[in-house]
Length: 291
Image 1 (spheres, rainbow, N blue to C red):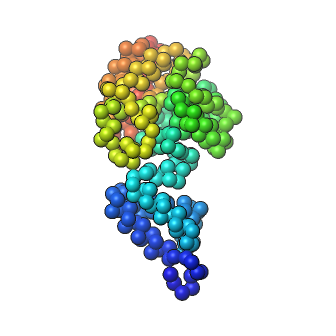
Image 2: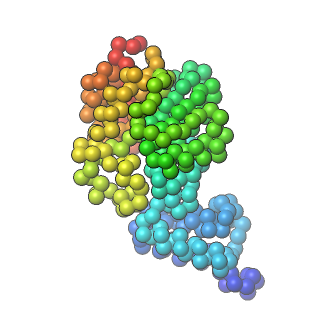
Image 3: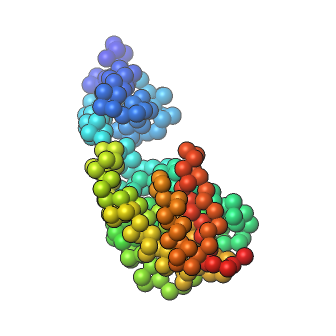
């Protein structure tokens, strides 16, 4: 502590340096960035506000050390802060949902590429909505659309509804608790889904941040990783309007098996769009024979 610092405080630069070293030793890939984000969270500010401070109070430091300990044990950063970025939004997250990934934005990009007219979409369905990230991003881009999100988890459904309120879209969507499309009778211009797609035997090999903390019901795709895709593909023909698009996230190596399921269910493959890493990530389908 410097002589001119208030009493019962600690030098911020030293605290940040020590935290970075601790996270690095724990194997965190971006230790300085995450240390700064956790410190800002502990102080109730953002990264910009962090630059304006030279010291941290004793109580906030204790909170920061608790966060550091949890992150060192591979609890995800977004669960510690309760927030995650997706598209142009910052969303609430919790252990009831997967943390939104940048790769999933590929599905929204695919829709924008295929339906560039922002008045062309009026109804959107998101099966397994989680945080609501896909549904809400699409509603932002198509201002005349209304959307429905469905999730098996009541906690996830409540979280998605809260996110809709937070981004000012609650009047343009509804979030319900349900088992995929069992209770859905309408038809939609777009059906999104990011289903569980990791083969059960592969779960134990995931990074500990994912394996030990994110909900397995949102990860486990059964013995071959395709259980939920079979349900989805059988449902899509009755859920899509004429010219409607089904846009589904794929796992690594599923760019042949899932399209085969779609064809067996009476769907045509429109495209498979890669993510920034070159992995086939967004499968786009439509009912067979449609232009």
